[in-house]
Image (cartoon, rainbow, N blue to C red; front, side):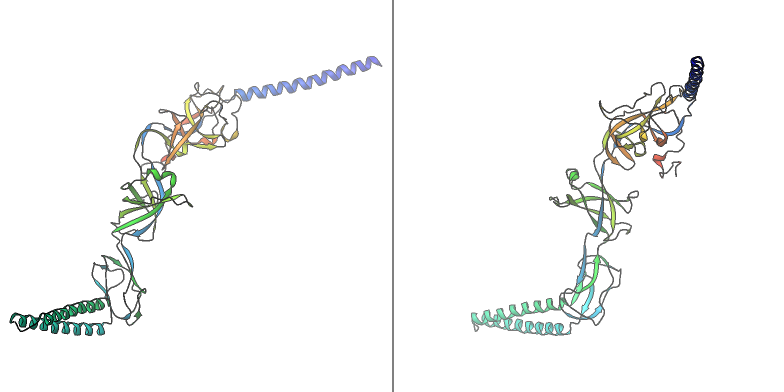
Length: 401
């Protein structure tokens, strides 16, 4: 009985050992197969990092208004007798626009002029009598005072008559008439709007952090879109006070509206040009990747120089592979491609257009990946194909149009 039990136990050990050994052999064979399996290099686009001249700017949105623009109104009450302009007509300074009923004022003015002429004749007679020695000084002074009073009265009546006539205060384009002939109008009733469209001003705001960068006379570009800014102007005013609620500072600039495309009240994109800086390291924004661990780029290097771990910006900085994945074991050890990528964490500075400034992490001469990063891990083998450059998509001459 004991002999049979021993034999059965030995057979069981042999069977179990065979199963365990087979599993270990199979796992090792699979591991060796995948470890030695060649890795296909990934195709990427790259850009060479070169020192460049950086032209920083301040982006904002502004509101257009006319340098000279008013809503015209009459100075006195009356009935509209004649409208002397048409909508969107170019008018000159002093041009007559609206005439109110002024018959009473004209009659008063004629009476005043007649009285002034009569008083002038009385003064002339008083002067002649005094010269002959038959007139008194009192009579002469009274005649001179009456004539001066008549002159003042005529000037007053002329001013009252002028109030019945509305004239253009400056040259510009007048809008749609808001009155009709025969309508009773009073001061405050808008007649039409008059805008000088040749010279416009743009009011915009910038953050208080950029306040020290603003200066009177600074060049400013304007446009209906951020990609097309054909209008040039200059800063003419900067508020010395920063709004304590919004933390913004108000700025005003003037531009010349040569083609007449801009209109008062319109929104425009504003770009304040700051002084240029030389030897700035900048890369296309498509090369920069942001993660929970920081901003990084992929740098293309020879496979034998590509490290297995990402290059850190400084000691102790947390590092992670893209998308939180680790490179497959043996991915670069045996493939031995000619090029591979290294994940490099960088410190970024300012942004301008499609470029971003790099203050630390890469140097001039490095070749950074601008497209295809979503499939890369640190140390992945790559093949460079710059037939299509996505960082220049939409620019003239690029294949990405």
